[in-house]
Every structure is written in structure tokens, then in C-alpha cells.
Image 1: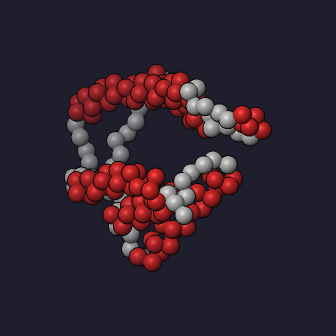
Image 2: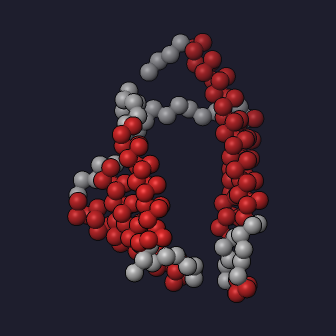
Length: 168
């Protein structure tokens, strides 16, 4: 796809401003995560294990590091390039039916977690997303949709000692 040099230059100026917006958004979210992590309560036995604040602190700090690196790159003249899509046909628009179905699925499964537990809700979510996005093998989709959330639940409850509703 070839464009006139003036059009590319105009796009570059507009894109440069939006890239600074991404830096600001990323830094703001990083600060928000770090501030909100302080309100997470830790149990008395947390001194012997990693508490629930470790991952949010790590993610918040990592967001600030990435925002800083991106800002340095932008100040040195770097810029992002418009993605041409590796396996996406950019000439087609958004499939709103699938997008709305995914949003409804996520909202619905989120409401079911207290009733049916994480493993079953996760399986429903995983299977629904795979099918909506075009999974080809029904039996493989079903098996993976059951195994992955169940393993994740076991890892969190047994490995990390966190309470997640099992629904069993």
C-alpha cells in the first residue's frame, strides 16, 4: 500500500501525539495499580508465603517500566507502524455479532461464578470463546476447555493457597 509522502508525514505527526497518549495511559494505569494494591488486605500467615500483593505490585511496576521505555523511544524519534495484519483482512470491518456475543458470554459467566464455581464457569467461558472465534474440533475444544480451567483452579487453590469457589 503506497501513500503520498505528505499523507505519511501528516499521519506521522498525528500518530506521534497519540503515542504519547498511550504512554500517559500506561503510566497512569501503572500508578493506579500500585496505589490500589496497597488496599489489598493480607492475612496473618502471609509472612511465610507470598501474599496477594506481590503480583499486582510486579504488574504495576512493569507497566511503569514499559511506559518509561516507550517514552524514551518516542523522545529519540521512534514511532510505531500501522499494523498491516498478519492473518487479518483489514478491509473487512468489525464483526459486531461476535463481539457482542463475547461480551455477553463474559458478563454471564462472571455472574455464574458464585453459583457454579471457577472450574465450571471457566470451562464454559473457555469453550464459548473458542467456539465463537471459530474452533474447528469440537471434542478437542471441549477437552481443553475442561482441563485448563481445572488445572488453573488447582494451581491457585492448592499451590498458592488462595480460596476460589470450587462449585463442587
